[in-house]
Length: 390
Image 1 (cartoon, rainbow, N blue to C red):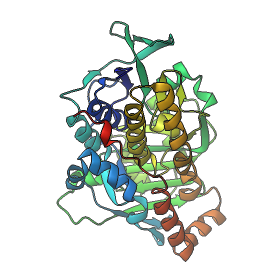
Image 2: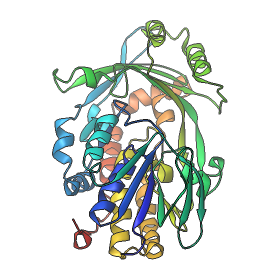
Image 3: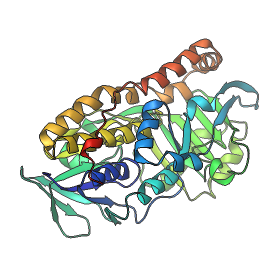
């Protein structure tokens, strides 16, 4: 086997999934993660369709994921006086199987920790592709050489920046920001019925969700790109944007001060001409991310399966394997960038809100739901089992 030593940056979903397959094909795998440990909790992620299920079955994790699934959460859209205006089924927003991101990461980590090396609390600071390998420098640890390097470190990927170019070349701001705060409802009420309801108050360019699967609070607001100094500035802007919205939003903003687990980022889409460069490849959101687009986790799992499988099938020949991976995933990954969650969930005009509410109750929405499910199966999975070594 050529190119046996590999480094994966990122220990959320794509990274451990890739580590799982590469280890089973006989590669020597190291995973580096800037966080000091696995991140618990987090927003809910989902899988939908036969392709996602097949990959999870081949990994042997489907039963574990189903045991820890959160169940579906319907979203009721209300106006400023709390009157219901529309409803979105959790079967659409949550897929066939929904699980907290932290729970999924824990399952994948448990399947890889014994055989793969995990380095927490560190990150890559420099990469140099020599043609014969990749010289890697770290923020804290000593420099090392690897045969191949993989970026599984999200939309704001450091590996992509170091190996492909500045973020502004590949990450497109989609005109909205979102914020989540508080432990997701599903993490605290797993003994309750599996069907739950969250409520969302809308105004032009604004959406405030209480009790949803992403977090206790989720906010979305239309805005050009902003430059935040720190989390204090983020919280201040969020409070200013939603002041006076009505419904239960004033109480939500008051509660927000008590939540330490707060995260705000732009809705963004990643577009790279190619997800490979020399001895470096991208997988998951670093290659084809679309914030809250509803396809990211499935794309990460499928991408990891294809990337590792093609590398094993090629006997470690990264040039041939990377070209095949890029070709296979290019069309499939398009489904991850086709949706625009900001414009759909928080239209910028009153007319747009009325149109959204009408659409959610129409047959057109049912047709869109069916198309989205079919699109997730629009890839022919190759069986790479002949290359397995363990």
